[in-house]
Length: 159
Ligand SMILES: [Zn+2]
Image (cartoon, rainbow, N blue to C red; front, top):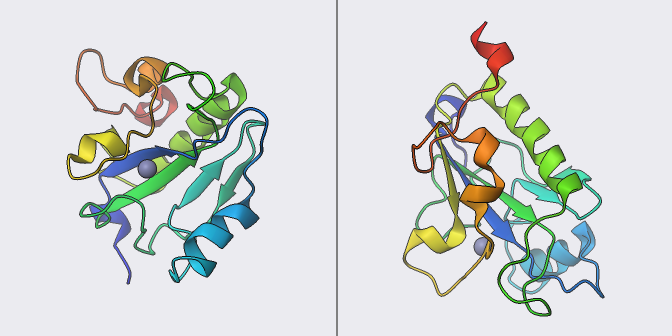
C-alpha cells in the first residue's frame, strides 16, 4: 500500500519501552513486527535509538503500520527509551532528540503538508501509552507557538 507525499500531514511518535539495562535494535523490531506479527516490514518509518542513530525502516510513500486507524497519510517515528524502570517521566535522550530534529528538517523539504506531531496515546483508540513522556514539552522547538500539535518548518525553509 502506498501513500502520496503531498498528502502526508502527521508524524506519529512512538516509544519502544526499552529499559536502560537493555537495547532495542532494528533486528528486534523486525523480530516483533515481521516474524511475530507477520507484517510486511517494520511498522515505523523511522527508528531513533538512544545514541541518536536514525534508521529508516519504510520509504515515505509506503503506508506504515504504527498507529491503528491513523496510518493513512502519516508517518511513524519510534524512539528507543523505557518507562518501566523509571516511571512515565523519562524522555528520549538529547542525542535522539537532536537527530529527530534533523529528520524533521528533511521531512519538511519533501512533505509540503506536514503539520502535526502526535503521540500514539493521542489516537484515542489504544491502550498504548507511548510515547509516555510529555512530548509536546520535549519537542517544544518544533511547534508553532501555542498551537497544539502544530509543527513549524525550520526557518531556513521560509527564507
Ligand atoms: Zn506506539
